[in-house]
View (cartoon, rainbow, N blue to C red):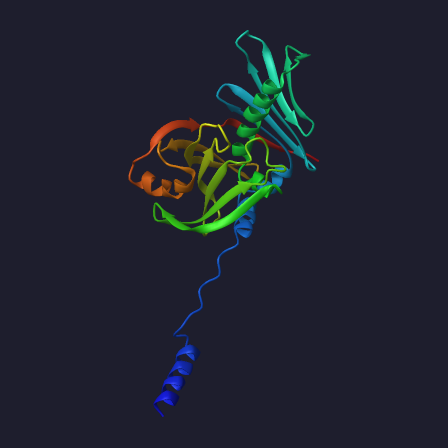
Length: 255
């Protein structure tokens, strides 16, 4: 009778909802998709984005899967120079003439231009096939709950810095990307480090969410410790490295 009573109580407990199954882990890919939609990045699939960054002018053109990113500046010799990257590779034009580049110079052009474009267009680049995303939990930053998503890249299609590691924090209500961290120099023989960015001056340009960033670091924080950044920010224990400001941003949709 005692065993029967216990079994009956257990049945009633489950039936009344006294025991709950754990909530399923959110899909990192679904969160990224929601964030890209919330940021209006569908506009960027066929558009030209221009802005000024640290005295250089950038023009980022994307159309039907192709891209053409350009950086225009004045070099140390006073020449008007344009560095560009396309699906065919990197190039440089100085005073209207194409410049022959060494492999190292070509890599430098690609890294410089692509890095600025990547961060300026986030989270749109997270739709790239080389992206590998993992949901790693929730954090509360300044009383706001966020999803934390870890991103790495496949070597094939992941670019020269495919070993870099990123963490992104997306609001659980609006999917806005307010914070991100990244670990660079993860390849053999490279000088590693980490950074943490906090968005400010958030605005909409032709429906696309754009932002500037405070760029922080904690000198001893490794790639696997980047989830500590929000806590260090709250304790004012980070060092400000720079401010990432995009001026005169324009977005023009292509037909």
